[in-house]
Amino acid sequence: MTDGSEQLTVPKFARLKSSGRKIVMLTAYDYPSAAIVDRAGADGVLVGDSLGMVVQGKNTTLPVAIEQMIYHAEMVSRAVRRALVVVDLPFLTFQLGKARAIENAGRILKETAAQAVKLEGGKEQADLIAALSDAGIPVMAHLGLRPQSVRMLGGYRVERDRERLLADADAVQASGAFAVVLECIPAAVAGEITRRLTIPTIGIGAGGETDGQILVYHDLLGYSPDERIPKHARRYADLRSIITDAIRSYAGDVQAGRFPGPENTFS
Ligand code: KIV
Image (tube, rainbow, N blue to C red; front, side):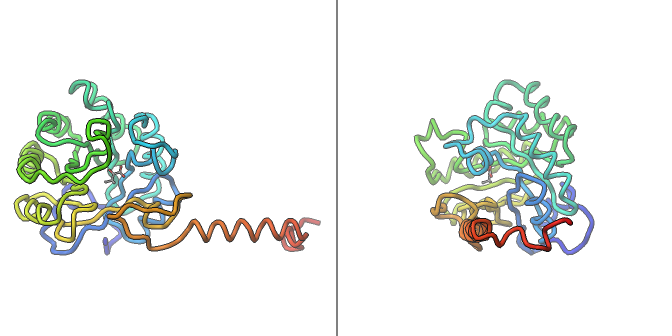
């Protein structure tokens, strides 16, 4: 967690690996959630394309559009004072050629105050990561379970191919990525990658040996109509119950004539 009021830049974030303390990241999608995450001391805020599922209620992240990412990233980056703000490049915004990818990633830096983009992919995206970095666009890579490949994978599965993961990790670091998310991979492999790389590893479902952790805001807070949370997440609050109770109290007060009270009424 950050201890000062200065905003974390990409180089400062990357140097956290050698600081010996764990990096704390969380997703956020709007102004109030981002401000609360930032003031609570998170080091990084990801505007994840997970918003397609947890905010828009869709089954996958595939339909998310670049305009939607920019809409959410503008609010989040305006709210954040200290954390590094990273924004996902959604499906088909970076696979259609370098020029299109640079244009889309560049829009995120031009139209919001975010500092970096994240993209799913390993070796096969190495040239693109280098091109984005050359264009001055910092890239956080994302290995392991890649939700944008859900149709190829046939579901959301743990990625266990150690050789592939090591090769991908080496490739994204060599191509200029400043950090890498490791999603749903065996803890031992995540530990091996973390010791092998000089850039920070941020884990989600990747065990305790990564340089940092990231969770989805709605999973951590129990802010979902669905009671289930993924195995890799831990629920620290039950906002679903808190919000339900508050709304029922309000409805009861309205129906019983207790709301509005004199303090809510103008003469
Ligand atoms: O979209 C997202 O929220 C993510 C995190 C789960 C790492 O990619």
